[in-house]
Image 1 (tube, one colour):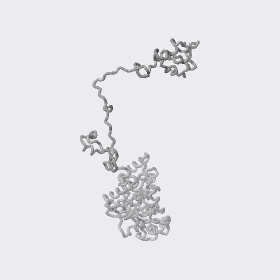
Image 2: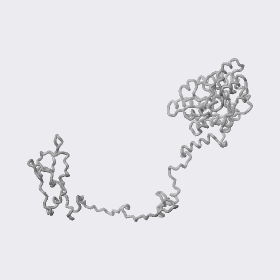
Image 3: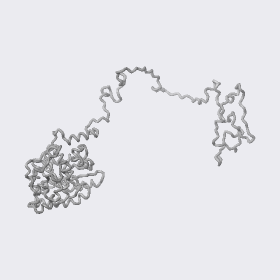
Image 4: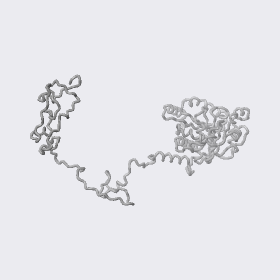
Length: 446
């Protein structure tokens, strides 16, 4: 190997007349030396012997028709004794004992082409002598074979089928499925002084879930924003009789309640913007804390549940709701701020129990906006369950976009998307509340 990239060709040294020092380019095409001249293969060729290689005065051999000495000669194609041109050297045969010829090398009989006849079935039928499928003893077992991918259990159904089953269970179109009905009216106040924890959403969806399953439910919207009225598609613009008239002017509640369209056994007492000034006007009213309680007791009809949606404050409106209720349902968002003001809410509930309503009890805690991807949600859930114990529902409301979309269509998530995770979670919470009311009706209404 030289510095300029050349190297010595061993085939041209020695007998070929080339000196070891003559360079050969690495781009030299050695195929030029192998000239297909039949005279090189046989010295007795009719055309005579092949010419000798032309050697230069320096000893370099020019590429002529003769091949180098160390290149094997090309066999004569005209000589039958030499065999085919460039044929590989035959290897000695190795004897194999009891070597069987594979079945794929056996000659197969030709398949006769059957012309297609109109109306004939295009299904391919297996021959009569076809053996059964592997693993089966006869054709009967093979016919009853079921793939492991075939859904054979209810939990193996496709997601759309499961969603449809949940939707039918929640909507209950036949009315055959019913939740347990309490012996007495359960008045539940949905309260939390922190805003945005899901009080209105919880009130609307629990009321719809219970009403769809055979319970008579009344929703009292005590929030001046009127979000519960919006979620139930109840008119609450200025001039509509609302809960303000009941609190200030002592209008009977039956004249204010409106039936919710599309949901049987569900009524709503709407709230307008006039309710914003009710707290100031109630200051000078006699028995200002029990105005709502008297209105509910004077209602001529019977309800299984009365849900009161409270504003995010601890003013006179919330106090009226606490006096009128027998149970308190506290929605708690699975974040730290929701826990920060919880002690103050519990203290106010205890004050109302001591001085105004001895029957009041914090019966239900519902965890909302649960995000399973965060450790904070798990930590808040564990703290709430350790502090309140069995009062915390096993059902947890996850973050679900369907729950937020439903009010924009004037619906609850139960009717907007009954197969969603949010609807399923609220349905489970409503069912758990109904079952608890049947187990302990005496202690809460005594």
